[in-house]
Length: 370
Ligand SMILES: Cc1ncc(COP(=O)(O)O)c(C=O)c1O
Image (cartoon, rainbow, N blue to C red; front, side, top):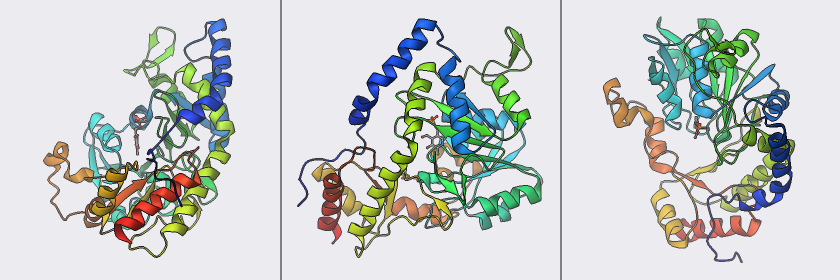
């Protein structure tokens, strides 16, 4: 029988204990050199992560939001342009489109993967469409074969929001290495998370690589020589040191998540809920393990009572958020995403979570709806 102890949604303390000695020693070395900004750890992490993703270049930036915004800027997207994206994502995906002066065009998602539906993208491409921004949501790869084909056919830029999907694969290729750019977040809750903020852009284009490197550093092409308006958006040396350590264990960390996901699948089988499907081709990174159920609220109440960590990603799709009232989407316009917001709940899944804890989560679900 599973212990009745509370289960947190995420607990990084065990991992921190495992990593801290090596991490501190890397920080110590950087400190002794006095190299705190764009030092060796950033340069090395950029090389190591580019190799891991299978992209020609990787550029460390301050966070995942900046990774998306710098990509849009480097691809020349701005006022009057339209960018097709998903309403089923964290707000930052659409926020940056608006931030550069373009308009997000939301299209519906697939009910299983929760990723943008390529058939819906096709219907919304117009003369002013400049880019497609799919999101590999929860770690499930979007259908990149179909989306890349549409981008190519219509001459559109393709920006992958891979914030939640470091290590996921679409077919044989890791996500982030397919579009013009791939954008990652290292926010602590992510599959590859640091202990603060951090982000990364991957690209196979030499030109975009040069441009993004300039943009992240105030648009400077040489010290104190500025070509354009840029940003202060550099990955921190202290975070890069940690990310290098965690990247070495990346496959193991993905396997741990996969094992917890498989265990949940098995234990929840037969209940009146839907467990997350695996991609037809590729690999899920399981940043989140999200189930759907008509009885979601009963599960949530039981979790609250029994102190089981959970999150509702997402309680309201972006096209119905107050901030986008001006875009005039009506309730019912993107029915798959809207229905999902009534039914989803994400369960705890993290490196260091025990099988006993996963068993307790399943036990509480069974008691609530079994
Ligand atoms: C899908 C998605 N895009 C973008 C971001 C933004 O990343 P960051 O918080 O590092 O700015 C996040 C982070 O939560 C995300 O989940």
